[in-house]
Amino acid sequence: MPQADFRSPRLFVDAPFAADATISLDRNQSNYLGNVLRLGSGASVLVFNGKDGEWQAAISGGKRADRLTLLAQTRPQDRLPDVTYVFAPLKHARLDYMVQKAIEMGSAALQPVMTRFTQASRVNTERMRANVVEAAEQCGILSVATVAEPLNLPKYLDQRDAKRLLIFCDEAAEVADPVAALTGARTAASAGIDVLIGPEGGFAEEERALLLKQANILRLALGPRIMRADTAAVAALALVQTALGDWNGNQVGK
Image 1 (cartoon, rainbow, N blue to C red):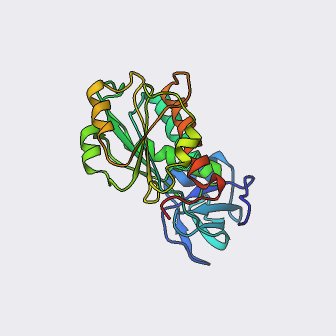
Image 2: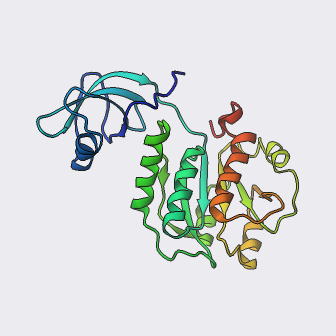
């Protein structure tokens, strides 16, 4: 696979791609290219849309950089491992951080769930989607993760696909070798993986009891120390990608 170019500016554009196609930019994109990056007509940028790979494009326009002309594909479209990150939302900057890191770690979808001890009572999914796009732009990611609307925990469990492996990261679980536990669940993960991280107050006992009744569930400890929820996100996703994801050539859910 061609290596990512991290020196050129990179922009997500929600439009179909084809050679020599011209794409109109919205005001924010024009401002970013023209006023923030100081790029003018003829300058080159990289663009992606989550479906058609990455392309080199040339800026065109008058005083404002308002159009792009697609020149050639630089990388073909890839796909993310079928991992959904399911989490109790945090407040403000820490939620931004959590979303960005989940994208960098290769999550294909984000699902907020509301639990008894969830700190945030409202979730700005548009802000979450903006963070998804920004993380993909900055890190050379071609596939753009989806962001679902929040659900309360029982409703989420009721409607999720029971064929998928639910990895329940539980601070009350007995500490054991998490890599070995995940590696042993490879067959169970063939239909996809949901990684669940709870709130910093932990799960209520009735929530834990409900979770442990679910089919195709793996209860996992993240070591001997209690982590903040945003740290637990990175730790859990790193373990999952190492044992079941694309860090070692696997492609779960393929």
